[in-house]
Image (cartoon, rainbow, N blue to C red; front, side):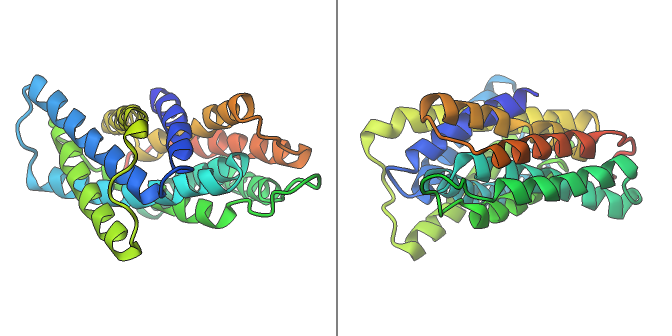
Length: 276
């Protein structure tokens, strides 16, 4: 649950920063700061370089995570946080469960019910409120972000060695390289205003903390259970949006958010066999 809290706060900050500069620029610098923090922690812990297996999965997780965050932050900045966050979370939680089902067998009844509830929740959440504006719900980028989050969960869950922060630092190198390609092709500015640099550093620390918590939890148990529990982060993000930004959420969306969070709990219940 630590990952959910860290990601919930960090995602809110990343979404706010993406209202001032392109989300790819935010992710570039946040991942860069995160890499420096991860490297410092790895040195302090006396970690050695990870083996090729963990380094490769760290790089894959970093690249997938960077692309997912770019879509996610863009959705939080341009769409409705109460729509983007739960939709991305449900998809991000469901993908590891589906992969686990393909490897160790189909999900149980509760997981199937959870997926059905998640689909219903996404349908309600994606409906804009009848009052006022809000045509841009952000549902499209939320789907892209959810797929990327799920892929990142799967990759990071394969890190098995003790050099966790060293693997995460290597992952951040891959993330920075990915974002440099995206920024160059899109013509976005590579440098953000100095005024938001402290915010990006905080976002980086929170994101790294969430990833580290998830990776360590996945090493102790199942990657799908860790992904499901970590996917509770929209509760924090949505609460911050309601309190700080005064984002209004319609009744149907409230019901959809509740269903989405219930779906995550149902999907994670009753899972017992670890991924190989």
